[in-house]
Image (cartoon, rainbow, N blue to C red; front, side):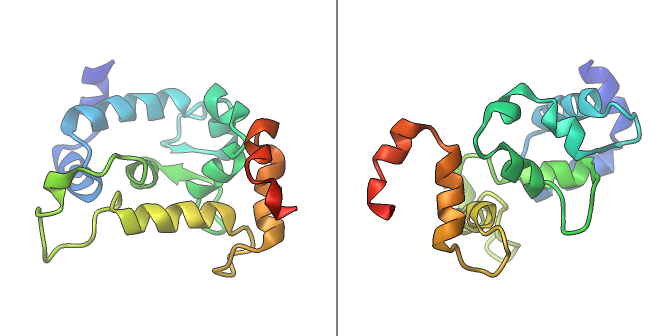
Length: 154
């Protein structure tokens, strides 16, 4: 399976994704295999429906918001590169990466990019603010025990 994925990804494309996202060659190859297995239409893109078939996202209270994070405004398909750019926000922050390329763009998994990404999951109306109603919508989806610890918001 891994060899099939590496033959379908051109070497220069793989290197660009590696540089842009910070994923290793083997991680990209593995994620490409997963991407192609999710691509039920076999058209090189994923739809929201493809993501909704992932059991972990189906049961996650923020699953819809996570899925929406993969799709730029107005888009209903995501290609492999967009898939990888979104996944890069979930990569752990590594201390040795801080000194990598001072003049280059900030890594997608930097603290500030992770914070902005998480903020967008809650900012449903995209007004650059999280309103009380937006926060409560999330809390309503979260397990009751977790809601109890932030009961003061009601």
